[in-house]
Every structure is written in C-alpha cells, then in structure tokens.
Image (cartoon, rainbow, N blue to C red; front, side, top):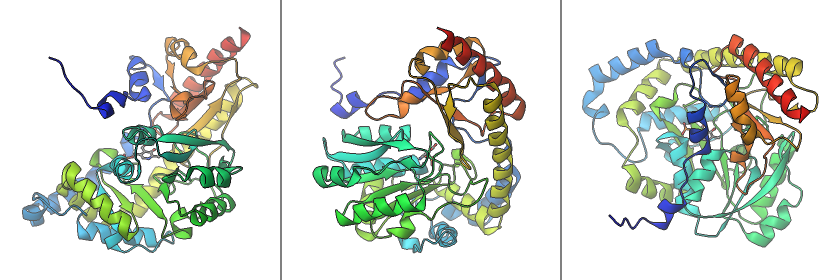
Length: 393
Ligand SMILES: Cc1ncc(COP(=O)(O)O)c(C=O)c1O
C-alpha cells in the first residue's frame, strides 16, 4: 500500500521520553526519568464516593453527550479555585480540555501557521514542543538562568519577529524546576503588551510549592493577553484527563471551535466526578498531602545529590513541582551516558529533548515525585558513581 500521509504526520516524531523510557523499562531499575505523580496518593476512596454519587444521581447527564465548553458546575468550581490565586475568570472563560496537552494542541491550531515564530525558554516542556511541531513553527528560544527564561534581547526579538505567542511554564517548570520571579514576569508582560503578543501560561505546578510562596500568575498581570492552562493531572490523577484553559473571549471562541472538531467534548463522566470531588471539599487537604510527600522526596534528592554527585556537576534547587535539572560538564553527553546508567540500574531523561532547536547535550531532567525515599538514596548514589566514572575519561 502506498500510504500518502500528510506532511504533518511526517513531521511528528515519537517522544524521546517515551523512547527513552522503553530502554529503561528493566526489572529493578530505579527511574528518575518519568514525570509521574506518586500513584499511592491517588484519592481512590474519595473518587469512588464521587463516581457512585454521579452514577446513582445523575447518570442520564453524566453519560450523555455534552457541550464542548465543559460541565458548567465544574467550570464554576475552577473559577472559584482561580479566584483564590488572584485570577478573576468567569466560568464562561473556562474551557475544559482532555488534559492540558489538548489545550496546547488547540493553542497550536489557532495561532501557528507554518514558519511563524513561537518564543520560548530553553529548556522547556517537551510536550508543548511536540504539540506545536504539528504546525511547523520556527522557535526562537531564550536561555535560562536560575530565575528561568532570561529576558535580555527579548524586546528586539519580539519586535523583529512578531511571534504568534510566547510560551512559558513560569512556575516550577518541567523540565528544570525553575520559577520566573515577579520582576521578570512583569518585564515579559510589558514587552508582550507593547507588541500585542499573547502569552501562553502553562501552569500545572504552581499549587505544589514546598517552601515560601509563588509569584502571582502571569494571567493576573496580563489578563487580556494571557491564555492560562491548568490541570488536575498533578493535583488529583492524570488518568482522569481533566484540565482547563482560560482564554479571553475571541481566543476562547476559536479554541472551542477547534475542540469541537477534535473530540466534541471532554469525557463527561470524568468531569462530573471531578466536580463532585471538589464539591465534597477534598481538594485542599489532598494538595497538602501531595505537597508533604513531594517536598520530602525533593529534600532527600537534593541532600543525596549534594552528598554523592561530583563537584563538577551543578543542579537547580527548586522549591516546588516535580523536577530538578542537572548540568554536567560540557564533555559529558547525557544521552550517550544513559546506557551506562541503565547498566547500573538507574535511569534519567537526557535534557536535550527539551531544547526546541537542539542543544543541552550535557543536561538531565530528574523527577522526584515517583521514586520512593530509599530509591532516591540508592539511585542518586549510583548515578553519582556513573558521573564520576564518566568524568575520569
Ligand atoms: C508543563 C506541562 N504542561 C502540560 C502537561 C500536560 O498535562 P496533562 O496531563 O494535563 O495533559 C504537563 C505534563 O507533565 C506539563 O509538565
């Protein structure tokens, strides 16, 4: 058969993470590679209660086709959660999506024409790069320092290239755990406003802070120009695939039309279940439980890294989220080193996957939400030995 696939189908590559995780699927291996929540935290009992209530009391709606925008009560409940963060969104601004990943795809659909520019940090979230790649943009990236994406030269870039949007994961970014401070958020907004460029604020992690507080969301500083993506994946469970996109009116309508064509609407039953879970008042305490566990795992990972990694290695010190970022000396290639690590029963994700235009060969993303405390201790020690060996060469 001579399949005549579209150019888009030809452009889409399998996620490096998925490919890498395949080789790291070895019995007994300790993996810092995935980005999974700890499954022991999934609130199964509360979700059983919520599902039972939905099926007993409302199955005729919960199992029916529904509107593209999403379950109105859930949208109202999300608007209330956002209000606590200083974001005044009406339920009419909120679109329920099948994960934030769908939100990213919809954003790509409504903004990117082939060859048009997208500005982002390097490194940045691989899933966003994948979603946007379907539409073949040109990426202009800005390097990151301890405070996330740097802004030197941003104005000139924006003025010259008129990007379709600036994509940011401003708080505890996947992959590096970095957070943009308020001053930098304001600077980016000032430039975005001046040139009328939208900001896509992808925010799965700001609720998961383990020390201090987080800066205000960009959406609260630039309400008319920001599309905010949020998700229950890291707060409740990613398998539910319930997330939200908050968009100003014109963009909202465009997103809804794209979603209609993609899947009509997000799983109605899951929307009802999440609503009942929220209405029963479980979320606040659950987030506290999640924070307690992840904060402990992060602390242990940071302590072990300090103890076991060679001094030539540096790393980020996040105060929230699920990830930290390791930078090896230039001469070490993290992708080439991975099989050595796997031989020693420990795995990570090479950081180069998170660079839209290539680079970062000596970087690594480390996840601390999934491995247990003892796995972290053993795995980091082993990884330290692998790094020391590589540095001898
Ligand atoms: C920055 C970022 N955006 C979006 C997503 C996708 O999340 P969801 O499960 O809601 O599709 C992730 C998942 O890891 C992420 O890290």
